[in-house]
Length: 216
Image (cartoon, rainbow, N blue to C red; front, side, top):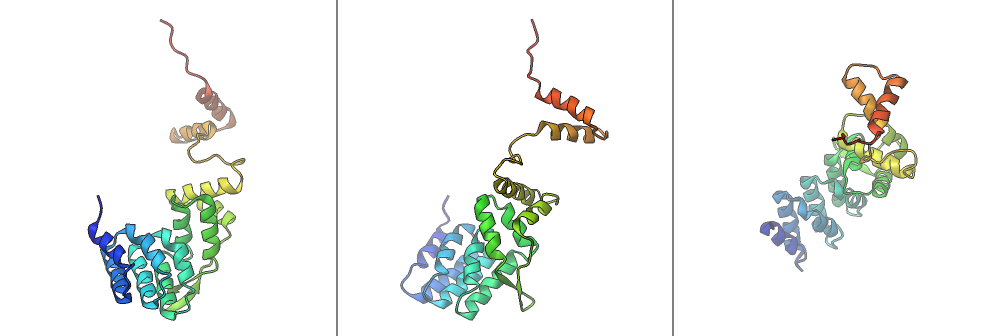
């Protein structure tokens, strides 16, 4: 089902009158529909800086992580207010701790895209209490190794995906694969027993053994 008010405002972003484009950007921010993100990202290249600054602000209202690459570019805009609004929007998406984890958790990005965006983010800045602050966080490999031990399931899965990519899928299982030995150990933990090697191997053999149909 289409959202006609959103579609109307997106079409107005292409109007020849910059005042119309400005009001469309403001309206899209207020409507709060994430389907407008791509159009607002494109309008961050508008020749009119007022359009660009309203687009950066609107993206802050939508709070969609997919806009991070475009916002990083906008944060270096030659017009101070455009850059300031982009940095404010980045701040709304997350600080040096939260935003890298959101990027890792966003399955819309490929592993390589997540690596590239994290690299760009390390060179970016955001606004915090009216002070421009650089993003500071670990390099991608140690960051992912830390995140897979944390509580956020989405960030953990994303970190694992990136680690798999960095390791060429040789050293780590992809998240959809089963590891019978790990599952066996988890069963023992759930039962309150500490898994020694013999218990794990016993369950591993059982987990890998083919099912045998009963004789009739």
